[in-house]
Length: 264
Image (cartoon, rainbow, N blue to C red; front, top):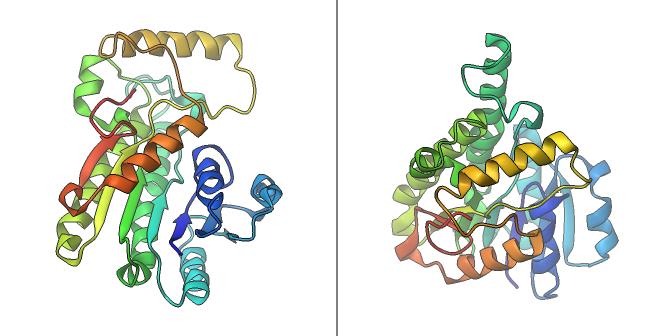
C-alpha cells in the first residue's frame, strides 16, 4: 500500500493529486491543508484512504505534528512526499523588481515567497525524512515552475513575477542539495514543473485577461505553438507519469510535466 503526503492539498493541483491518487484504494493519502476550513472538497470525495491533516508549512510545530500523525498511521514510514504548497502574490505579480511602490512592499513579497516556497519546503522535507527513509519508494517531489529557469526568463523577456520566480529558482537548488546528499541511500528528489495550469475559481476580469494574453505572447517567443493553460486533471496525470518513471539516475532533476525542459 503506497503512502503519499501532499501539501497544499485543499485546492488546485494539490487537490487533483489527492483525487487521482486516492482513486486507487490501495494508496494511502495524507492531505495536508493550511486550514481544515478549506478542506470541504477533500471531504466531499468521501474516500476512506484520504486522511486530512491541518498543517501550514510555515508552522514548524504543525509540520512536526503532521509527521507524527503520518508515522502513527503507517508504522513510521512514507513512500512519497509531494511538496505542492506554494505562495504567489497575485496583486503584484505584474510588477518588476524596480517598479514596486515601496521598498517595504518589495521586501515583504520577496520574504513571503522565500518563506513559503523555500524555507517551508525545507522544513517539510526534514520533518518527513525519517519516515521516507523507511519507505519503499523514497521519492520527494517539489512542485516548482519553469519561471525558475534562467533561459526561459531571458528567452521570453519575462521580468515580472520576480519574487515567485526567484523563490522557485532557489527551491530548485534545494532539490539538488538533498539529491546530492541522499542519492547513496536510494532517494529520488525531483523538482517538477506542472506546466501553466488553470487553477482559477472564478472568471477573470478584463484586466486580468489582458495581462494573461500579454504573458502568453511573451511565452510564444520560446514556445511558438503554445495556445494556453492546461487543466489540473491533465497536468497531474502527466506529472504522475513522470514521477512513476523517475529512477535514482534522475535524482536532482528539474523537469516539466512532459519529462523534459519544455515548460509549457
